[in-house]
Length: 216
Length: 212
Image 1 (cartoon, each protein chain N blue to C red):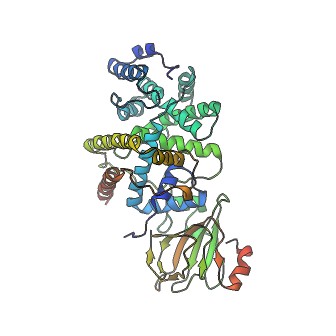
Image 2 (image 1 turned 180 degrees about the horizontal axis):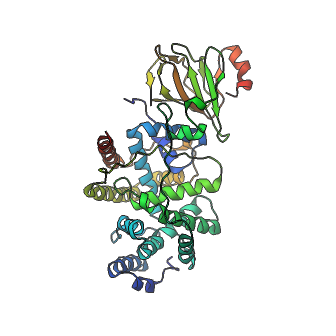
Image 3 (image 1 turned 90 degrees about the vertical axis):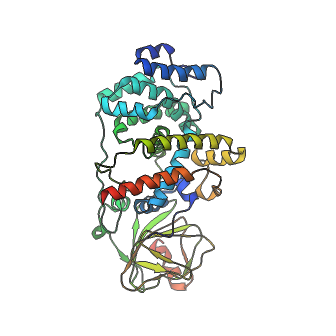
């Protein structure tokens, strides 16, 4: 799986980063689920994205690339792209990750969520069928820096969502996967109950209300 | 206060990126003014993130080097562009029209009602409707799914009242007579994946010419 991921590469990183990366690699290399990688040793992707945004840190980006590049490629392939164009587009997505890193806001999304939205937009561009305008964004005021505690809680809730998704009955999980990998139309999507979105929704809602308040 | 929201199905499909363009426009416009649906969408995006994170493919050994070369040769970073909007039209609509409300090219469709068809992919159509205060939208049923988002004024039908930000989700079973409330002309964004069927003979004859 990590054919292109050389363990030697880790030695070129700052020590802490090398440890994080090696842990992830070791975990995969033990064969504990090649497709369903355990999240227990997850590096702080949000912190790595901040380092890319603030100091154009190549090592931080290499770690993000090693993790998310292959995942974006898999997502594009499951959405119907052939391996070659999926690899090409995954590279486009990672270039965008670098360029937009400054716009990542850990108070409103995890790194995986944010990168998913970039990959989805790239997939839509690739299909050249239905444009998908984004909503008007809420401007971040100077005082609207996301609360560190909020960001941590959101991260934990996202991890719980991942666990819950894995624990779903196969039929329901497969419905959700087909909805996201562009196989289902909106009319075919069943009522989406049982997804534990409640806490994430209320946390984001809180962050939005605080933002509105700070803008007034 | 918005009381009629988008359904989870629509928000999930918008997050997944599988809706026809005309519906995407309605969803993006509603979320621009609705924090509740914005938060729900963030939840569905998190589902997408969790699915993305759960599976991986093998990438060629030179991919990282290619990407670094492209990054170093291109623009350093991109900042989000400021998107214009006006008091009635949120940014996604201003983008679609290419300007504010004064740029909309209205056409009369009878009964004082005016419409402007927006350019989208042909899987579904989107249009702006301008209904004079107090006037009725022709009585109609639906073949497919129709979303109607109020941008100014308000309308009510037999069951409920819809004001700015509210979205009415009508399906094949919906048969209703919406009426704009007195006081202010009602402006709506409507999208449908099937032609509307009017009950009266005249609007039905006019249908092919009006492209509705």
